[in-house]
Length: 224
Image (cartoon, rainbow, N blue to C red; front, side, top):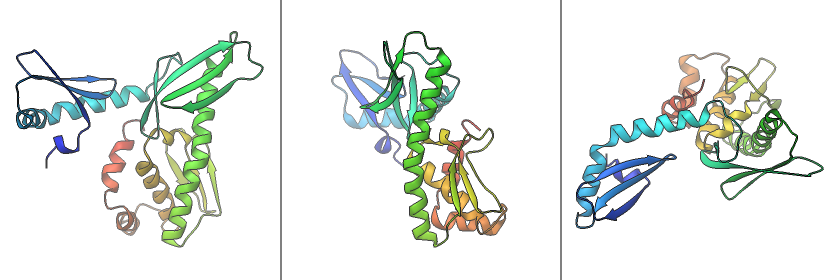
């Protein structure tokens, strides 16, 4: 498999003698001499596949760790990097919104860090209401089964759960991942509507509709 072909990276040519690779804020930057061919650059990138993947995973894990909730911090939203931008002032009501790669928060100067954290969590909750509803409707149409109720709620040790009363709960922190991973978790819980266990039949059902579920499952192990 051509690793380079599926990798997003920025190529910077300059008057240097050797090629090297930087991982900056989760972005891959390749520095190369002016006179080197594209094929040699691609071969070099392919030779560094293991190192690049390792560094990208390290960055992703850091982005999920406990935050300080200060301007400039990076938060994941639907798999993309969003930079926190906090504006302090004489605001009657605190607010949070997503705009062009930024999480913009307007808040009074005397507010504690805990309030900023609450606003971030509120933002993930609002995103979850929209995204999970979309995923639930998709699986309803495909599987021809449906839960009695779907709830967005913080879970300490799981991304989602389904109980015997056909109630599905989804953790809003799941919104840090991209749509494909979210769809996997929702499918996982939908399959529990038919199999309230992790039997072979359960995993066969998951695999039938998402053959790459094992790869998606691995991504979720970065946190829980």
